[in-house]
Every structure is written in structure tokens, then in C-alpha cells.
Length: 143
Image 1 (spheres, rainbow, N blue to C red):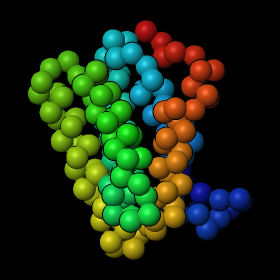
Image 2 (image 1 turned 135 degrees about the horizontal axis):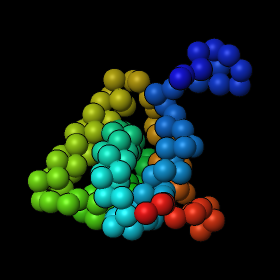
Image 3 (image 1 turned 45 degrees about the vertical axis):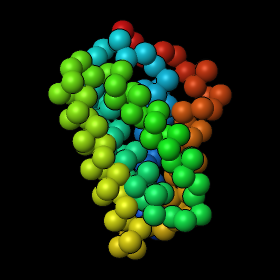
Image 4 (image 1 turned 180 degrees about the vertical axis):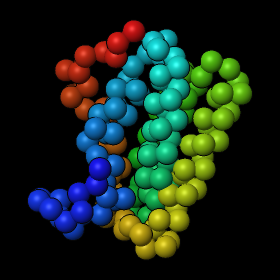
């Protein structure tokens, strides 16, 4: 599903971009109530942990990115984990997956697979997705 050198995305590294769909989905999950479609929400949060965690992990390594920005997104994501979990074991499993993804993300900077400028943009997209006015116009998730 990646674009390998055709059109306007030519030369763009697919690992650098998490995509607008993911950003919008993250915003919806972070803003929605956890009582709806618990099984689907758990799967969605599990998927998002693998996408949001690496961004936060990489941001932790970047000296120019304020820790408060990272902490705000991490706290909101952890709150979602608490909300969608049906049991303590499930909550711990999701939190551990998120923590592993954060740790893995730290390595993307140190290995040179990404740079702090692109991580800052991705973090800004996450911040907008969880607090932007676009959420007010999105319909709530189906029950």
C-alpha cells in the first residue's frame, strides 16, 4: 500500500509518515467514550500504540522537543488505555505494548532512520488530532 516513487509522494519515506487517517483515528479514539464497541476499541488502541509509541519515543530523544508536549500526548493515550480495558490484565498488556513501542521509537533517532524535524511534525499532528477543532465536526463512533 506504499507509494514507491510515483506521484507527489515520490521520495517520501513511508516510515516517517503515520498518515492522516491514523491521526484522525487517534483523535477519535482519544476523544470518544470507551463504553462503545469495547472489543473494537481495544484492537484500535493496540494498533495505535504501535503507531503513537514510536513517535513519542523518538520525540523523547530530541532535545528541542518540550517534554511537556510528549507527556501530554502520552497521558491522554494512557487514559484511553485505562478507559478501553475490560480487565487489569488487558490494561497491563496494552500499557506494556505502548511502552515497548515508545522504547522502539527511541532507536529510530539514534539509528538515523528518522530525524528530529520530522518527529516534531508528527508530534504536532498528534497534538492537533487530539485537541483540534476538526474533532468537533467528526461524527461519534458507532455503538
